[in-house]
Image (cartoon, rainbow, N blue to C red; front, side, top):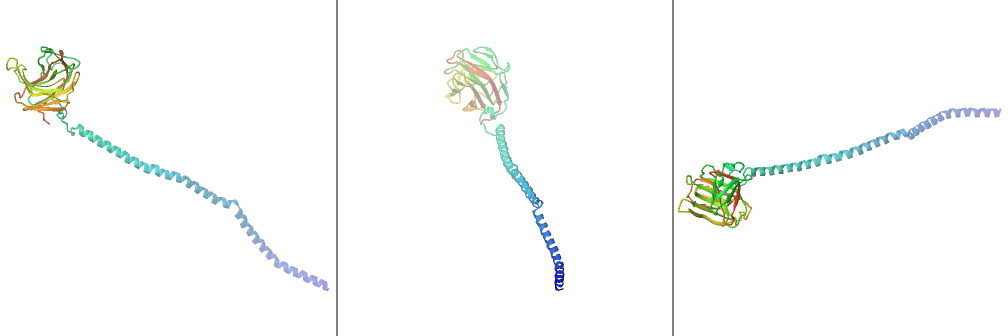
Length: 310
């Protein structure tokens, strides 16, 4: 009886204990499951992959944008500005150079060469056509050859050819003349202010010789048995004259009032004053000294009326 009672008491106690343990077991089980779920979720790769992709994407975009953005600013913005400034400077320099050339071409750069500062001539003959000069033979022979007027001395006397133009008053007369073989005082030049109705037997003679000397003479062929030749400018040497055989010189004489100004190759040689002749015709003369067949070739002659002396 006592044993049965004790066993029953133990059974009752076990049941009571079981009733209190079951809820604790359920709670422990739920806590365990919740903890495990959290651990499983935290260990899952999906949770970590998403931030990794975002970081990689941002890094790749940043790496792609930086090299493109920075060089574009450096190459496109700054060098273009510098290049534009340099190009502008070059254009400005070119414009200034053009203005300088234009200024010179307009005559703003002063020149003392009459052919330059007097502008277009009133008359010019480049010997491309026949008609302005008497040809034939007397004290010299004259003919056209290769677009030049060729004159050859046949005597040791002065000989000339007068242009078939009107008489001139104040004028600048210029002739480009090449001499062939020459020596000593073989000479050639311009005869001018030859008065009308005198048989071309008066006037002034300006010229140079083979030795490089220039002179100016007054000629009166109607006085005395053989005329009178007077030096107004004695033969004077000048480095402006090309000397010797086969040389070309550009001779010019400017007659304004009583002022007679001599030029060679665009440069002033000297000036004299004389009032014996004030108007007249002009032409080309030559006189041999050492060379029997002294020959000159005239390829450009012109005159300017009423010139200004500089």
